[in-house]
Length: 324
Image 1: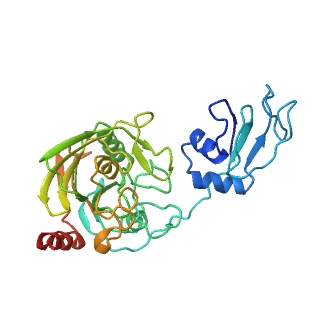
Image 2: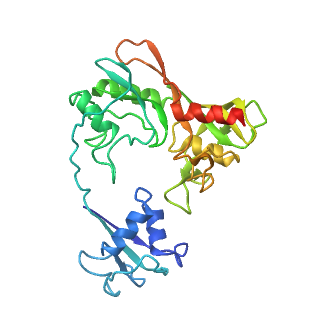
Image 3: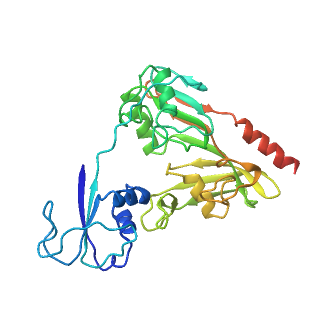
């Protein structure tokens, strides 16, 4: 259990308490903080007392602590206490699963992840993830660096993104691959269909990515507190209202291609988070495919590169766009 106390200054005065906490605790989503507010895990001490609250008491000379709703408007001098409960332990069980394995040895395994599959357990997905299938296939032999819920996982791709993903079977391989990712030496090429017709043949988007300050469930180009992010893109094929592109990542931020392409007016087709709320073509999720992954093998030192073919739905969509 973690406990925090925040004092509201002039800049925080007038803010809703849930938004204030979302700013202070960027690691937690706003919806989770609202849940904690409902459960009474957030306390408010009104007033401007100089002394901090003692355990179980309000600030010395101030009013006693009370619970408030998510829409409570803070005043300068208020103190907000937050108690984060210990995360509930999830039972991570191996499950037999049909995996399309592109390559496997004693150090690494590369799979072609299908659309709709979550990479590792999270809320609502505890036993139907790629990790569950890898645990079964690898008989539990996966690196433990990322904890019990993400064994073997060095990088992730979104639920509705398809394509190449690598997992590590031991900690040495994990350290080596994580270092390559940090140094941006891993080759990562994606294919996507975006809204609109891109006129230039290629381009580069160099814009920092961080949490969307108005919607904590989204990422955004964030000049104030975003992290360095670079995406190179080139046109593969143009259609009447869409463009088929290939993207090469220099960095690997959350939703990087989706955010960057949307930021220049070309959101991914099917992406309801960063594009139109009702996607055409009756698509479920963004048209994004991790086509190529290249890296230096952690044991042999040889450069290896693997490619996953476009999924059937993607090929069919391209043919449909060509006909029209």
